[in-house]
Image 1 (cartoon, one colour):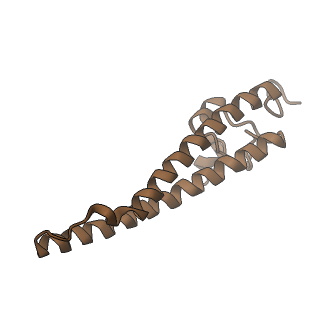
Image 2: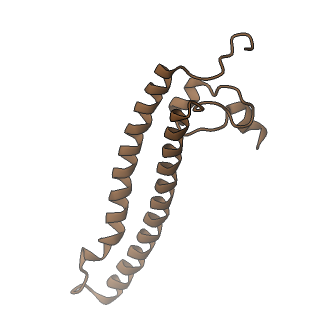
Image 3: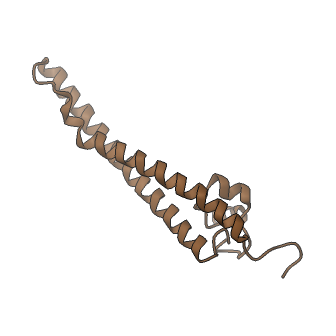
Length: 127
């Protein structure tokens, strides 16, 4: 082993990261459900008896809202997938190892971005 550089995070550290990720997945799934509910129920605001020009404005706004919620839902699904992949890396004991440098990703970075697969060093090189 190199001086002061461990090859991987300890089982206890991995367990702590797993708890954080599981909570983030639960929150993200709840947020995703809200987003999906909002664009599947968006037409229930009933503008049947309102002035016709307002109604068309309302429908246009509703379409835009549906599109942005669909985009947000898509991003949320990717986030959940990335978090689940992080759980697989925890099980494989490869979590927190930069896929470019092979060095450990800092705990500070993993706490902020628990699904990270690149260290800051590698991320900055790819820009």
